[in-house]
Every structure is written in C-alpha cells, then in structure tokens.
Amino acid sequence: MELERKIDILAESAKYDVSCSSSGVENNTRPGTVGSTQASGICHSFTPDGRCVSLLKLLFTNACIFDCHYCINRKSNAIPRATFTPQEVADLTMDFYMRNYIEGLFLSSAIIKSADYTCELLIKTLKILREEKGFRGYIHVKAIPGADEKLIEELGFLADRMSVNVELPSRESLKLLAPDKDPFDLYKPMKQITTVKKEQEFLPALRRGPSFVPAGQSTQMIIGASPESDRSIVKISENLYQKYQLKRVYYSAYIPVNQDNLLPAVTTEPPLLREHRLYQADWLLRYYKFTADEILSEDKPNFNLYLDPKANWAVQNYQRFPVDVQTAPYDQLLRVPGIGPKSAQNIVKARKYYRLHLTDLKKLGIVIKRAQYFIACNHETPAGLIKDPEWIITSLISSKQYQVLKKHNTQSTSEQLSLFDVERFEHAKSR
Image (cartoon, rainbow, N blue to C red; front, side):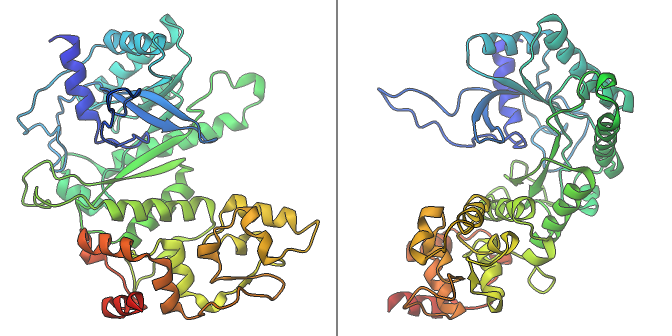
C-alpha cells in the first residue's frame, strides 16, 4: 500500500482519540486566507502556559484483534486496514518536523497480533526517532494494556507523555461492550507509570539518568455509550487524579459509528453538552479545590443543562453567599462564579496594599456579570440586584442560550432543573 493511502486511513482512524487535545473543528479556510485546522493527521495540543502546538497524530495500525462494540476499528468491521512500519512513522515525523508543520508526535495503536508485539513496534519506532534521528521533540505515546512491564518501562523512557485509555467509566460497561479486554490490564500500566515516576524522584540527581514520562500520564473516557451518571464519572476522575497523579482526564462524547443493539442508535447525536459540562467539572476538581461530592450529589447525579457546574453549585448553596472579597480567604474566593484562580490571586495581592471597592473588581479580572450576585466588598453589595436564587438563574442564562439548549437538547435524561421550571423561566424572561 502507498504511504499516502496509509496516512489517510490511519489518520482518520486516530481522530476518535481525543487525549491529546485535538482541535476537533471543521476546515474553515477561504480563498485569500492562510491556515487550516484539518490537515491530515495534524492535531493541536496545549502547553501548561497556554501555547498551542501542532502534533502529528497517527494510529500505528487499525488492524485490531479485539472486537469492542463501540470502536470503529473493531475486527468485525469491514473497513480499510493499514499498518505502518516503524521506519515509515519515524521518517514521516522527521519530514513533517523539518518542514515546520509539527512540533511533536502523538502515536497510538490498535492491538495487532498481541499486546507485547504492538508495544515492541512502538518502542522500535521511538528508538529510531530518538537514537538514529536524534529527535528531541515532544512524543505522546499510548501505553499498551496487557504488555509486559519491561516493555512499558522501556517505552516510558523514550516518550514525554504516556496515556492509557480506560475507555468506559465502569468495569461493568467495559465487560459488556469490550468483552475481550481485562479491566485489570487497563489500570496496571497506570499504576506502573506512577510507581516508576515516584521511584525516580527519590533517586539522587546523579543517578536518575533519562527521565521517565517527564510530562506525566493521561487517560480518556467515552461518554454516552454506557449508562453511568455524571456523578459516577466525576468520582472516577477524582479517584484517578488522586491515585495515579494523572495530568488530564479527557472525555469523548460517543459518536455512534457502529450499528449495535448494546449501543445508542447511529442516528443519536453525540452528547457534546454533557462532554462540555464534564470538562468544566474537571477544572473544578483540578484548579478550584472542589470534590466530586460537592459538584454532584446522590439525589442530583446529573448536570444542570442550563448552568455550568460552578454556578449551579453556587445557587444550590446560596446560604454561603455573599462572600466579602476584602476578607475572604483564597479558597473561598475560588467558589464564587466569575472568579478564577488568577483573579482570586489578584484580589489577595491587591488588598494587601489598599482597601478594595466594588469599582476595583473588574480591573482585577472578575467577571462582574456573574460574580455580582455572590459577592460583597467591605460589607457593601451591588445595588439593585434581586437576591433570589431562581431569579439569579434566569439572569445567568441568556434567552438565546436557553433556546439553543432547548432546541438541541440531546441529554434529556440528565436534565436537572431543581430551582425553576421551563414555564417560570419563560415568564421571567418575558418580563
């Protein structure tokens, strides 16, 4: 098979793996403009400082021995199959890099022949890049569940970041939809990566040698293919962050690609809003010091479609507000809608030098439109606001946003409107 045809097949097969922050947008180029978001095999990832980098995103092979119900590459699907050679992937990476198309490589793979055999192919590819071609750019590679521990370790010393996709939120769903996979095999590499990294950190600097997965590890969960609640997914993510020190958990709205009685119909819209809410909740776990039980409770286990998780928590706990920005500790400021980590830091710094006023807050980065209902400043609150949770909800949601959500609601089973109903919302907006 010609190399160009392999690229077309395997770049297409790789697009469902979002655990490297793929842009996920359509080609919007027009005559007279420069740049494209949809070049074959190119995706966008982001550094901790917010810089966008381009990665060559490839699947080493889509010839899989497994028959997972949800996967486009399942062995029972009649789709074109292709497999790169290690030399081809290495040459492609260097060719794209030398032309300044990319800054790194994201390499995943289906399981061909066996887990060990697949892992050996990935190791050979990275060795060619690192040792023969001297490539020191960023490499994100998939750890192959079920592969020998020595192979996983060798792969980790060649890559910057590794990821092990847990695929589905629960072991019950994995057993039903991916009967060939052992849940233990999925979590074993995660534990190994965490253990080796900790062992290396305790070694004296002169004995550490090459860094093992210096950029850490991540994972991906498919959302909407199985019946788990939002709360159960958030709690699983919280556990993964605490137990394995993951850098990111990625959420992928299930796109129906296979006709299967165990899955949503192929005409079902992907639950994109639910995916968005999960990412918002994920930020609350990682940067805002929330716990999963605070974000969602047993009696309300699914997200509010109309409010982001932080605003929803605030109106559900309105007795805790207003928060006085002049005296509140940093952790309490983070709980206020419209105040993020950076603006909370700005408040803490500024109040050391002068007494804050309501007019100062916008300059410190606070989104006043959202925060005004939840803050005070030196016991003074914004004048003229109705301090009623139901009214606040209607004020936080624009009529335009509400109509869009109502029209494209593909997550009706997760709807949570605990403080107002549709008729009351429409009546309030019409006044």
